Image (tube, rainbow, N blue to C red; front, side, top):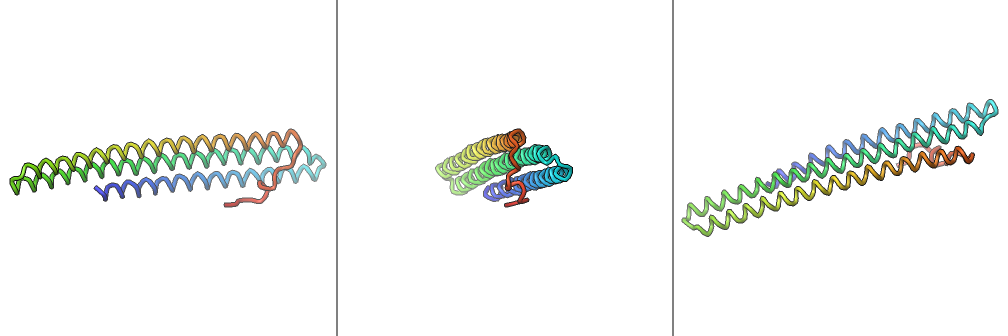
Length: 187
């Protein structure tokens, strides 16, 4: 039973980590590329004397790239949480049922060998408790992972929309793109 629990946890964590890192990598690349594209547009417009227009375009392009990137990070993190929860939960369910079956079989075997009805009842009771515990813990873990995942996706969407909105606001008011976007990738 314990081997199944550990196996489910490792599988869920591994798949979740891959999804999370992939989402972050794509998001950072998109944000970086959009920022540099916006900077290039602004530089080009400054050369021909319409730098204010280029600055506005830079704000919008960079913020859209950053906003989409933030959304992708949230989706990757959310998917990661869901997969981790599902893997761990399934491992707990299978481990609980498997371990409970072994406890029940062991109790029945001891009871039959010794001619002890009490040992049979005790083994069955321990097995049923282990099965029930595995099922309840596993279901709870799956639900918790799903909840964390949905929250992370929502947080990513909100962050992405906020970034886009801020960029549009800066473009309309004539503010320069923040230095945060010009520094490149930071971890």
